[in-house]
Length: 221
Image (cartoon, rainbow, N blue to C red; front, top):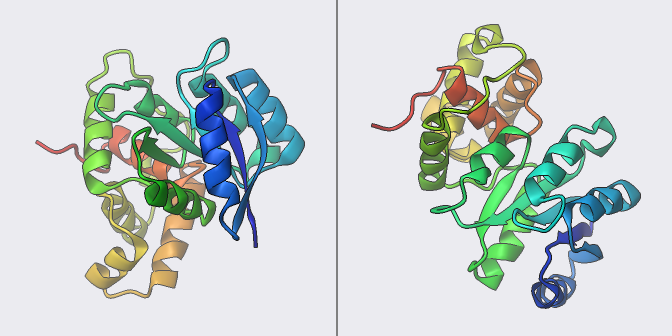
């Protein structure tokens, strides 16, 4: 299957560079480009891409607002958002995660890492390393104006689902969780999916945010 990608960035040269890189791969293609968030939402509804490569800082409707609107639309549930940002300085990353973004990459990312990131989120996995997860969640929890998580709390999970969710919040992959808990990767994926459904989490990354906000996972000391 070909991964269909929408580019959302206000820098024309950067979009052109990404298009050349992505279109050079046999397993993915760029379906369209947007220079602002409002256009990104419009084109996402028109094309239903597998992945939106979304810049946060854009004029008018920014990437955060666009991500929130896309992720809140049930008709776009199959579309994943891969946010382009800088971990150390962009406080909006945590908010994007909470509204459903599936992954985060710095704008200085290598070509190989960008392409692999697109493939990762298209496959339904979160693009969050353990270090990035800890940094994002710690900053998010320290934000006084952070909104409380709405919807069901972690009490609706079974003991095994809670255990798996805690490990997901540590940034572990399905394979790593399976090895640690002596389960098959398929069983782990099933537990993750059930936890996402029960907690109304659109993505694995959003599941991580909910886990920390609900107290199921604890931030690093």
